[in-house]
Image (cartoon, rainbow, N blue to C red; front, side, top):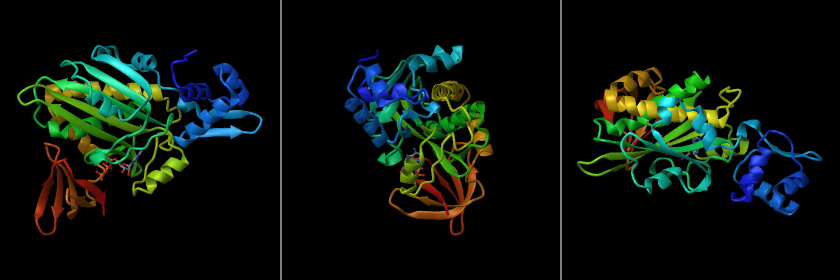
Length: 333
Ligand code: ATP
């Protein structure tokens, strides 16, 4: 028995086989009291886990909530990619997987550290906004990578990773995902995932990036409603029609695709990704509002991205305007 994990994580693991477990059975299996089990179940619910409870049968989680397991993710990687992963770790909880990797030393050039958490207490989007994900219902993954030299167009790395995510989703059977500049993955105009790139560069030296990926697998109605309150419509892989959204396979596909993509970006630059991006551009041809750092709004027609990943917007007053990633936020108007 894995007694080192907190009880909540052990209860989660017991319940995630998709079968019902009574409180009594759980207490016995885990060597704790029934009231301790009850408290852990309550805590799981409070964190947003979708738990079914049926009188006289007990509790269960959806089958797709299989616990994340480092060895299963590693097994699912291509053998070529595995040679680049020097450490892949799954933890029950952490403030933010990005913050944790940023606090560690840079991995040597050509190798990656990967960290996944079942639950983040301080998950972040851009500009510090909260990223919400329940235990068992999402992938919260960060990956660090050191470039030997700072690549041209490093500022557009979010677009590269968006394309990598799209390629991974296609392999898993989700063929209709789109990309919203600069860092969102959408299905049916709803947000399936977000990307957060953070950079630690020393001048003239190597550049270490930490790439955070939040991908929704099965959020559950209460969390979808909570995200809707922030003005964003979210979706998840189950709603997008993925019948078997096994999280370890999804995580493996993301790591595979990102590492392949980082190698391709180092070798060939941004160009191959721009073509893929253009095919999946969710904003192309739509009227958009681009909100700048101090709240100023530019309205215009989205005209795709240029070869450096900047968003092009045709405005009535100033003609074609160009926005680089940074601090702008785009909404369809
Ligand atoms: P913008 O387009 O304004 O830059 P964004 O879409 O890039 O914003 P991020 O900053 O990357 O947003 O992410 C944080 C926002 O995403 C939150 O403010 C919330 O609205 C939304 N959000 C939080 N959790 C989730 C989730 N699990 N799925 C989808 N959206 C989420």
